[in-house]
Amino acid sequence: MENKFEYNQEITDKLTDVYKEVIKDLGEDPNREGLLKTPERVAKSVQFLTQGYQQDPDAILRSALFQEDYSEMVIVKDIEVYSQCEHHMLPFFGKAHIAYIPDGKIVGLSKLPRIVDAYARRLQVQERLTLEIRDCIQRTLEPKGVAVVLECSHMCMQMRGVEKQNSSTTTSAFKGLFLNNDSTRKEFINLIQARLH
Ligand SMILES: Nc1nc2c(ncn2[C@@H]2O[C@H](COP(=O)(O)OP(=O)(O)OP(=O)(O)O)[C@@H](O)[C@H]2O)c(=O)[nH]1
Ligand SMILES: [Zn+2]
Image (cartoon, rainbow, N blue to C red; front, side, top):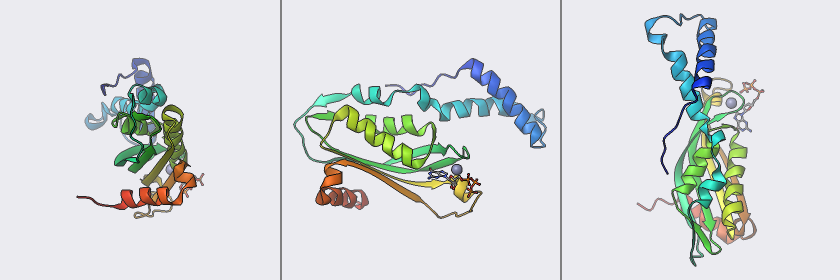
């Protein structure tokens, strides 16, 4: 699966005009050298950062499902997350930790970070992002349990607003054994906190 992203020329043109106006409204000169290409760059950048709308996370997971008897916990942790809040369209970013307990099916490991990106590259709130990742894994893999934990810093709380530069937000979503079995959930929490190397 390649990472190539194709910009939509019509949307690029439309947004380029919009950002030219934004720059003017901010009191800057869109015709000065350093800013000449900026509206087009921003037009492309926002398309890149919201490309998740064109992706189908269920299909991403379904593209690499394998039958396997392994029935212990699988954890992929410290997955970088870059998203933007739907309220201010400012970045929030941090780490995702994902675990599941297979029930006959495992998934290609790289597909978990891929669905994180597919949901993160939209206008989001951290809570919904967490639930969407969990529910996608539940639907497609039908595992015995799923756990998703996100730890993120929100630029809208750091650069502006309440201006709390060191705050971070943790969200979690559990299903199946992670929800119903305390020791499974504890094992997961211990493993994502552990530094094995
Ligand atoms: N629950 C949740 N809230 C978020 C997220 N990202 C941003 N927010 C919050 O969304 C809220 C929007 O509140 P408003 O009062 O409408 O916006 P605002 O006046 O800009 O608020 P301040 O950020 O407090 O200045 C703020 O409290 C943000 O901190 C998120 O991922 N989840
Ligand atoms: Zn915000």
